[in-house]
Length: 346
Ligand code: AMP
Ligand code: MG
Image (cartoon, rainbow, N blue to C red):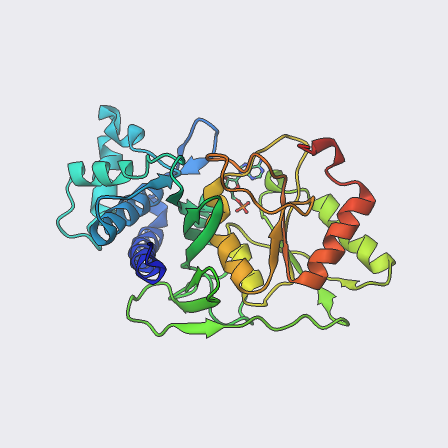
C-alpha cells in the first residue's frame, strides 16, 4: 500500500529544495546562459540542478523503488566540451546539497530516466516555463505522482508567485508559493522556500455570475491559440451567459494553481495549427491541484486527461480547466465554434 501522506511530504521537501536552488540561480540570471535543446526549447543549469535535487531527495526519502520520469537528462553535462556547465550545475546544487560531487549530480539527474510502464510513477518538470524563468517571471517546479493513469499527488513550487492575490504576476516574489494536493484531500498552500513554513488548506472562492470571466493562458504565442480563446469568450458573452474579461498571460503550470486558488476562472490551452502532444510533466502536478480545488480538468472535447499513454497525453487535445459551471460554458462554446474539429483523435 502506498502511504500517500509520506510520499507527498517527501515530494514537498524535494520541490522546496529545488525551488531554493532555482531562486539562487535566478538571483544571478545575468550569468546564466540558456542552452538550446533539439526541439529548440531552452534549458538552463537551473533545470538540471533542480532535477538532480528532486531525484536525490526522492531517492533518499523513498528508497530503492523509485520510478521517476523527468524532462531532462545528463547527456549535455557529460560531454567533455561542457564541463563549465557541469561545474556551474554542481555549484548551484551545493546550495542545498553540501556533499554533491560531479558524479553524484549526474547520477541524480539520471534517476529521472525511469519509464512509464509502472502502475505508479513520479513525473517531474524541473523547471516548467523556462522562458518565464529567463524573463524573471513565472515558472514552476512541478512533481506529480501518477497511479493507473491518474495523478494522485501533485506538488508544485511557484517560486515567483506572490501569495497575495492582488499583486501582479510579473513581479518576482520574495518567497513564492507551493501548492500540494493528494487525491481526495483538497489543496494546501505554503511558502516555496521553507520546509518549516506554515501549511494551510485553501478553498477557492466561487465565481459570481455577474463577474467577468477571467481566463489564464500561455505567454508564448506558439503554445496556445489566443484568437480561439477570444472567440470562446465572445461567444459566451453573445449568448448572455457571462461577461468576458481580458485574458491573463503567465508561463508554466502556475496557471493551474492560479485557478485552484480562485484568482482566475479558467486555464485554457487551445491547439494551434501545428500538431502538438502535451507532455505528462507539464500537467500531472497542476491537474491534480486544480482538480482537488473543485475545478474540472479535461481536454477541449471534455475528455479526462489520460496519463497512461507514456510521456505524452496522446489521447487528449488541449486543456480546459475551470470550476464546473464555467467549464460547461467553455466546452459548449468550443463545440459550437467547431474548435479543434480538425484535430480530433477519435
Ligand atoms: P506554458 O508556459 O504554459 O506556455 O507552457 C510551457 C510548456 O509548453 C513547455 O514546458 C513545453 O513543454 C510546452 N510546449 C512546447 N511547445 C508547445 C506547443 N507547440 N504547444 C503547446 N505546448 C508546447
Ligand atoms: Mg514544461
